[in-house]
Image (cartoon, rainbow, N blue to C red; front, side, top):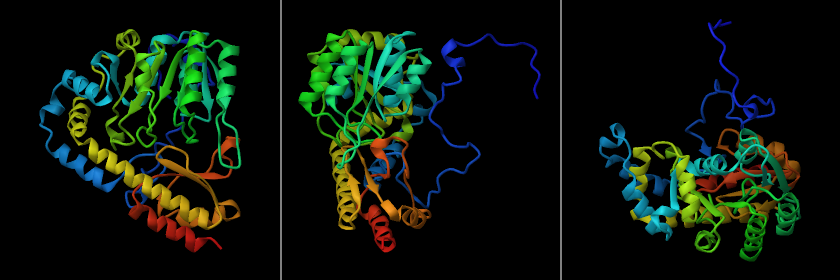
Length: 368
């Protein structure tokens, strides 16, 4: 055991809390995912056509993207035009996760109440613990059609708890649930009436085409966060952004690091923004693959839940162990969930129809 000469001071109380546990990355001694298998476990975009375009763009990036610090003004202007807002409404971040962390850092103090859905993106409850907030979870409910989030339950929790922050991914993950525009507006208005900041996570835009970005012109308490990890296929570059009214964005910028994102990520994304049509064509391909998979599973008599993200759920029922065994050497996917709303379901990330077809065929061979 190493003996140190000095003992460090104690960290913040929230960090010493034994209950603070980040989502597991798995055992670091484990081997990484086998590149020979299909990776459908983390909702990445592995569309071969879009990946080929990204590889071409990478090959054209100058060496200065490696050795120089980022100059981000041109990306801010170009992204603002793409999103349809002013540059001073944007903050570039390390993925949408970086945007969420920044919101917590700028607004949440110990003792503040934060409302989030359950189940949801794993870092919402973690950031509540890290910043000493009191988390209040609003559960998705199991239904015959799959998980469902009820807006009236969110609104009731907001009115009862008077939170500082309300976090709502739309679509949510891992459930794939959404609130329709009128329901979502009611939640946003309830948060505003309670004096809360409203964070809407649009990580899966434009797999789900509805967006509340235009609402940032109407609601002074609204923050929308997005990522390039899903539709744009850039999960490894860790680049996202927040959109909010200018006064809120100014506060978010106060707690950002010296450089929001790295030069390589900025260079790739700025060039890829010239190919929005390719991104949207990829979304169409992945949605087609998802639809084909769901239809094939339904034809086998299996319960399915399509949801609204770049992923979908299948309940293999009594055949689950047999199917999991058959797929073990072919594909990575999420096999089980603890929350009742997803009990019995397995989750697959969407990919192109040709990549999904062998998985469909293997399941068909396996099901009695």
